Image (cartoon, rainbow, N blue to C red; front, side, top):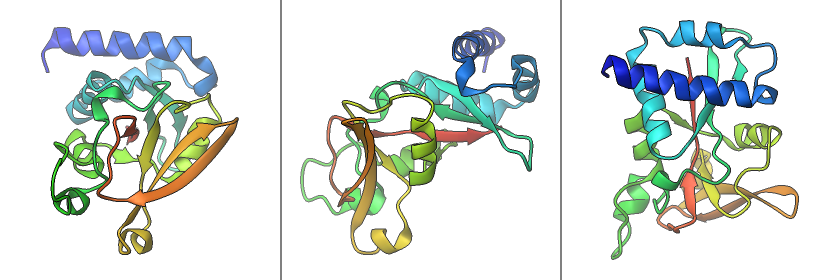
Amino acid sequence: MKTQEREELLLTLKVRFEKNQHRHKEIAWADVRSRLEGNSDALRSLREMEATGGEPDVIAQDGDTGRYIFCDCSVESPSGRRSTCYDREGLESRKENRPESSAVEMAAAMGIDLLTEEQYRELQQLGHFDTKTSSWVKTPSEVRALGGALFCDRRYGKVFVYHNGAQSYYASRGFRGLLAV
């Protein structure tokens, strides 16, 4: 990443960080920036999160490792990550109208993790997300083995978890990612 691109990304992240202090009380931007400096993999992942509409921001600090947890905080599921099946197996099982990619593959390529249902619920404590869209979440292997996959959204003031076939995709369903730095 070029120096100018890196500085523009860091400025975008800093502005968002300062605007949303309620997401990361008692964490200083200088400490976050210090952790990001020289971490080209993390910066690449954050750039991809930003470029696909995720609006990544710090939502926590891991008490055991000290790592800062970035999460997609866009109000709706990131627009550049919608219309995907859950995983490669789901995508391959489609006979026609296959989407370009899957949530699991895109997340891996970006160097981020899909949120678990628990992490998704924790994110919803910081704001109201996915009131018009939905987001795939990491699906337990026993559900996936039966052909299903899980997704979440917020409706009627509540957070819901649902199931669908892993091969399904909708223009309003994407996925949110998590990155520990």
